[in-house]
Length: 467
Ligand code: HEM
View 1 (cartoon, rainbow, N blue to C red):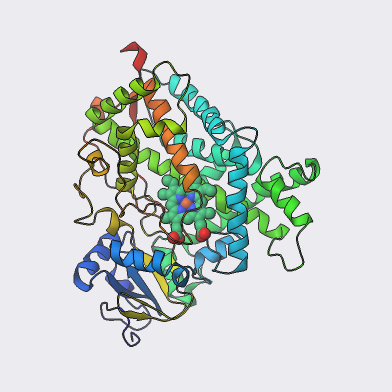
View 2 (cartoon, rainbow, N blue to C red):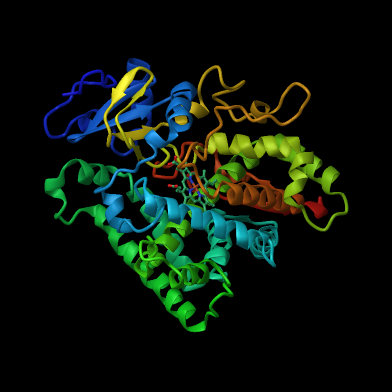
């Protein structure tokens, strides 16, 4: 039964709750349908566990911004907590471990961005390797899937481990494979059942593959930690691992830092920084190759602003309103993390007049913001005009929240935005990307997972200087 004044929802069945009313392969359409029936704040039972769904800008702002701390918890004792052994930052509950590890990650990202070699340079270095891959495909068609994953993975690897990997290196191939597989398993049908029905947890379920993948990744990062311990110079950190080891050396007794957390913490950041940025890029390029007039306008603006400059800098975005609009529109349409990361309430609270007890699971339906009627000029089509005003200036509507909002908001937003801009501008400056004539109609329906990804596609690569 729903507690008194709890958000409404469909009838709850014993044991399974509302699971049978959802398409477990991809429940996003069901969540939209339920929103139409029950309003912007409704509830569903995942087995015996109640979950409140938040839709639309008004309710989202009240929860995530106005009452941010009250909604800043994370569910524990779920499948994904077991995978990360409660040691990272993404799934850590609201409290000292989360706070200290979040602060540390933000500080490290900032320091390695502003240090000797700026983040912009690191990103540009990696883009050069991608350009080498693309150069080999000029005049041909190629699949961008793994390329963008390798690229995003390497950028965050430089911060975390002080190194990048050749695209055929075992480390990056395995890590990218494990991340992409686990992103689909992590909220797939078997995990929904695992979380809902504790009695099945010891069975050999297909989702257990995620544990094997996590073990492989842990082994790989463990090797890096051991190497770092041998070669580091205390007080002269080369990367995130060194910084953490330095921090451990001076940690107070009540510190939440510990060596056994380091591997999963690094993996947390590596995963969060890989599958998100690359799926956003894949979506952006899918739409650019299927909307050649939009790509052409980007080419014109990039040529005009960069002129004879060697390379783009992140500051150039201020002179490129159209490109900025295209990137943001790609993020809106990509809707890369459609349900954000699940939250919980940290105390008894209220939302839009409903009462929500402490510890209730909160699911942010970010899709509901990105296609909300009244918030966008063109909510249901790919159109950069959504981010341009009548003067052609770039504007960001409030309902744009791909990184979520409030205390748990994505801590990699700054890095991700820099990557998206520099990668897209640099690649579009040099190449024209074309939908292959024999590829049929593009399929824009994304594949469901913790991150949405476009269906695999191919693109033809042309050198712009040869046009
Ligand atoms: C386009 C790229 C990205 C998107 C769309 C994205 C989106 C998100 C979203 C929706 C959340 C959940 C926020 C919440 O629970 O309210 C999140 C959390 C997080 N993201 Fe990102 N992200 C991106 C890139 C990155 C990158 C590059 C990093 C690299 C460090 C990163 C690290 C994290 C971390 C650590 C969290 C957990 C924060 C916490 O729980 O306090 N993300 N991200």
